[in-house]
Image (cartoon, rainbow, N blue to C red; front, side, top):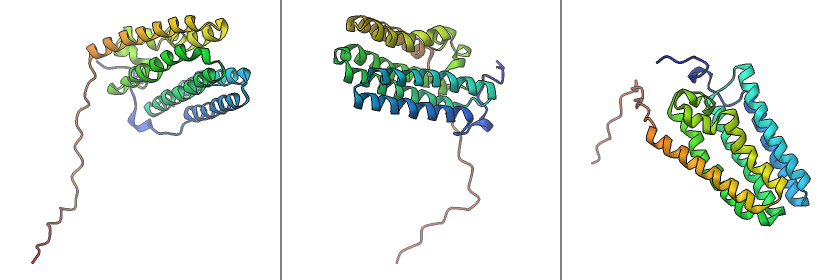
Length: 216
C-alpha cells in the first residue's frame, strides 16, 4: 500500500541538526538546568517552571518540525530521549522536595522510562517518520498513546493531579492506571509483531583481500 510521503521517512532528509532538534536541545538543557537549581534551592516554583519549559518546548519542537518540513526519525528519537531526561529530572526533583510522593513517582517513572519508551521506539520497525504517524500501522495503539488526547493523559494528567491534590494515593492510582494502559498497548504491539528489516549486504570492496603471508 502506498502511503503519503509526509508519513514515510525520507532517508535523504535524515540528519541530526535541524531547526526542530535545535529547539529540542535548548528546551532540554533549559528545563534540566531549572530542575537542578530547584533541587539545590529547594524551590517548588523553579521545579514547576522546569516542567513548563519541558512541556512548552516539547510542543514547540514538533510544531517547528512540521511547519518547516524537517521531521526526521533521528529528531523523533532525540525528542523521545530528551523527554525522558526532562521528566526524570522533574519527578526526581519533586521527590527530593516532597518525599511523600516517592511511591507514585516510582510507578510513573517505571511506566514512562521503560514501558512507554519501548512502545515509543517501536515505530523504528516501520517506515513512518515518528510515533505521531503510528495510526498508519495500528490506529488503536496510536489512539491510546500518541493521539492528542492520548498524549495529554499520558504526560500531563499525572503531574497536574500530583501538584494540585498533593495526595500521594491519588498519584499512585493514576500512575498505576497509566501503567496498565501501557501494558495493554504493549500486549497489542507484541501481538502485532515487530517486523525485522531486510538485511542489507555491504558493498563489495574493489580491493581484493590480501592473502596471509607464509611463515618460514
